[in-house]
Amino acid sequence: MKTWKKRTKAVHAGIRRSQYGEVSEAIFMTQGFVYDTAEAAEQRFVESGADEFIYARYGNPTVAMFEDRIAALEGAEDGFATASGMAAVNGALTSMLRAGDHVVSARALFGSCLYILEEILSRYGVEVTFVDGTDLTAWEAAIRPDTKAVFFESVSNPTLEVIDISTVAMLAHAVNAVVVVDNVFATPVFSNAIAQGADVVVYSATKHIDGQGRALGGVILGTRDFIRGTVEPYMKHTGGSMSPFTAWLMLKGLETMDLRVRAQTATALRLAQLLESDGNLAQVIYPGLDSHRQAALARAQMGAGGTVLAIDAGSQAAAFGLLNALEIFTISNNLGDAKSIATHPATTTHQRLPDATKARLGITPGLIRLSVGLEDTDDLLADLRGAIDAACSQR
Ligand SMILES: *Cc1c(COP(=O)(O)O)cnc(C)c1O
Image 1 (cartoon, rainbow, N blue to C red):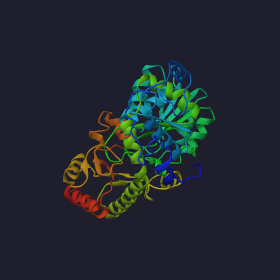
Image 2: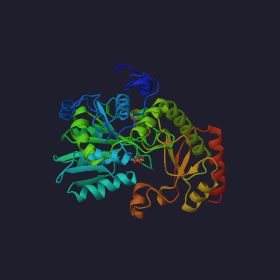
Image 3: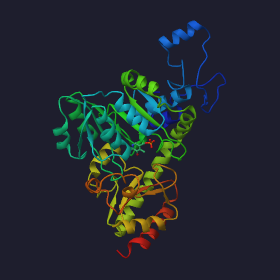
Image 4: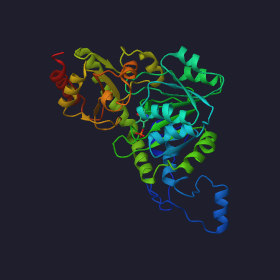
């Protein structure tokens, strides 16, 4: 199994067949497990083996299949599946941190990630220093001998800044800080985060892993020691585990993820290139474009630009006009979905931020995040060009 390529692992890794020899993974829709004897129950609570389960909040065979499959894909020793991406971010951080600890975090974060770092951790006595994630001298200045962890999104939401995983990891490892990477935009398909120095990788499985808008889920990936010794005790006692049915959806999602993400990425690149050359937008941001501020880093770190781009219509009025004129792209806030989705971050996902913070993060009134789906590229292009003509021509 170790020598298998990612696409083979995505289909076969972690499989546990029951006595019936089913081809498709079984859904073990059970909260509990029966012990043959009282002695066996006692023994299982003392130490349970890889295929011995106690209670679905602790683990379940379908969930274990998902954990083993995504861990194999990512090149991590182990993983813990969670009820949502946010349960994963929260579990990765709060399971290891305690009052008095210091954390350095990139400032450009998904709104709920920012809430955990800014509001929740500080409430429990953890000090967090925020930096511009693309500024390596800022990381160097902020990381202290007592820094316990660093946290960042490897590609930030929604402005698609790329953070240099290996350099930040080198700075963090110099003081033995744990490097936690929220890797949603990079996707497990293009990720090399662990090889590049991340200690812990977190995914919202809601995004590309399901990829079909059906369920919330997440996963924390890392060393066996960290996952079983630090994360599992915290998660199993606080109740953020993934349900068996969700794990089954995510397992089936993993089987097609590579094909979906590569197709969506090819379309995203083509749309970004053509919209940029049309010249009718104030800005087209895509890590796969040569014009991206960190194009070389994006290429070296991920080898592709991913499934999301951002465009700037110039003003909120133009952005709303554009959004309302779209026929295929739906106005929503998921990403990585088979359906193309357009989001206006300033008034939805990042509404809570003060205007000055939005400006600092590049979340302009005209910014639209486009998650590119599996539809026909020409149809999507025509949809965007039509909406841009309708909304931005008077600019
Ligand atoms: C969506 C997202 C999350 C949260 O995931 P949920 O599954 O919605 O809880 C965290 N980080 C990033 C970068 C995301 O895009």
